[in-house]
Length: 292
Length: 288
Image (tube, rainbow over all chains, first blue to last red; front, top):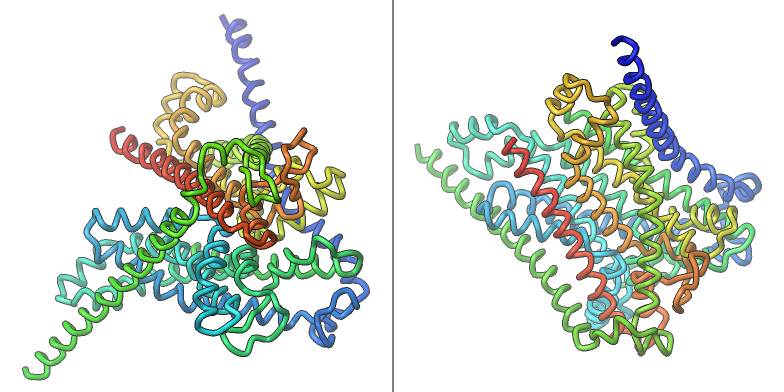
């Protein structure tokens, strides 16, 4: 009896540990991908990181990579303007959408509107870019040529980050304990008074985390911006001037870049990744605080 | 008393104002969404036909169809999914079933995937170009494009699968071990089938993400629009085709509209199906 039991148990134990081994191997591979990406970005940027002082990205006369002039500031400024502009538009609209779903709409309407926002997430950036190019750019061109401009980039980016803000704000608002709201209503506070005084402060961390995630997405967005922003390396003076962003610059020049130029593009990729990593790290911390 | 009534009137006014603003923003967003959809449909429906789907492109895409592009897209997707799914799901099973939440190894893996999820797609493109295309010598090919996408899919597949496994009630695990099932048997016969709808939903979300991707494929899978002969051949994905037609081909707008319509309808179907799966699981959880 005992013998047969051991015979049954032995291979079973073996399959369990075999399975664990396979699972661990998979997990190690997933963890290594991030290391591999960082490693290759650093290796490819190394020729420039070692030789050219980073100060030159800010002091060179212009961005003419073929002649060895690597002034990154106008591109950084373009990236910043486009992202901040999109955030300024998307934050109020996104929070308003979330409030609508949670507190204003009937359950049926709320379900449909939430579904619409979720479908908006699924539209690929290249389609947003194409729509911007064929619809928004001619419209802006009528207002003020050339049309492909900072404004077009801001509008397209707004559409792309709006769902992120809406959906994270929605889940933050849903997580506000119902008794808070019931107490507020029992005190006779008006609906907006309850939202402003109770719901929004309680959901503050979650909403901020969502906004930071949206900012990261806006910084890293490539195709849509590339298609509508005009891609001229310059400091924009008005909303109607064309700009070039960091991500669009990589997409435009990697195809033909050689030597130092290619390394500079990898440096800008590394910079972009670090920026986005810092932002998503902050968002993660905020989320953790919310759950604590 | 008078003052109280005054603040009350002000509050009512303010509430109405805020409500108006919120309804106005919602209307605006819905209108823009419908505007985009109507624009795409109006621009593309006339050009869309069965021939468009089964013919090769002619005159750099201005005429003809998108058949080889659909094939390339499918191949890139297959490579990405077949590479990413085994790695992602084994990671998810390990994280959800075999290591404690505060385990150091588990934490490291989760952190690494969290960081990976935030990396912009153009950076994946740079990495794919440097690693798969040049270092591994795969060149501009469907294989290097697919593998680059696989790296992108890892975080989303892992996190959805882990969340799905965690929704399986603990009674399943305790009952299985009380009956003397090994953990492997419990996993295969009980937990994975119970979590299957969420796994499927996550898979669909991943496929949607991969279909929509352009920037990561720019320097990895290449631009060539003919029918691919093998996985080492360059192939143009559908999203890249739209980009190329609208930016580099004058007069390519109509086929670009039609291709966008194909891409968006594919993605809408996939996303609605994913929502259905996730919704189905929620309903079943209430019943048990």
